[in-house]
Length: 255
Image 1 (cartoon, rainbow, N blue to C red):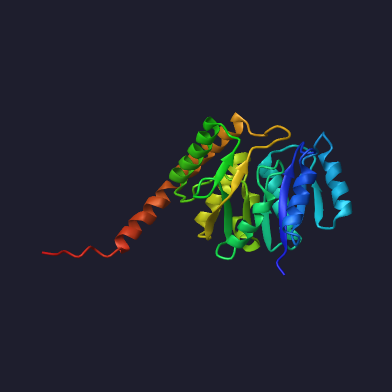
Image 2 (cartoon, one colour):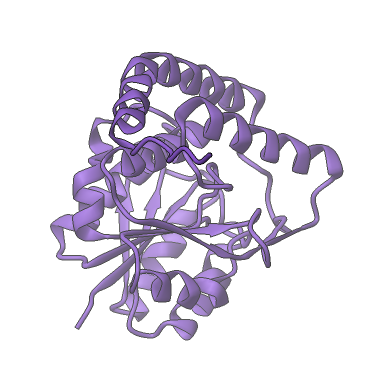
């Protein structure tokens, strides 16, 4: 049987965690949940322990403090792989990723190594965002696609499923990015390694409880990193394009 571990980082998500856990495990009873808590002062870590005590499918990884989304996912991914996961899922704790849509991602792994729950493909949607925030997200994904040569439309989405072999090849432990930057870097690594990446439509819902961890600093970090990666990779991309053009047969001439 396939062992699926869903990694959910938490920081001050005490109002959201229990509901998300119940919905997740009710939707995919065979899955397991790993809560990676960054020493939340609101008691999220203690709640996670209480949930784990009542359900063997729930695990808790405590970290000493808040170091960013990327660091939490790196720790969670390493734990999941060490404990024998065949499939690893990343998902937010704030309710923006609907647990009821997880089967779409898992089904996508039948034909791919990495599956992205996408807001920006046909059938995808966002609820509760202003036009400005939608434009910012679309612009970030579009810039990353151009700078890094990636075809995926939702480059910053954080609802994803990986096969264990794909995650091992991506090797997120050697990433130093946080926030959007981490999502962008793991996707770019997947594309650069030639892994099969597909997008499935999801509905993204703005959180009801708590406050967003997004900040202007995280966005700026992501854009600076993307620019640096794109410039560093540009010579290789141009070289591949030249080789592909040289290998293509010349068009036939007709009179």
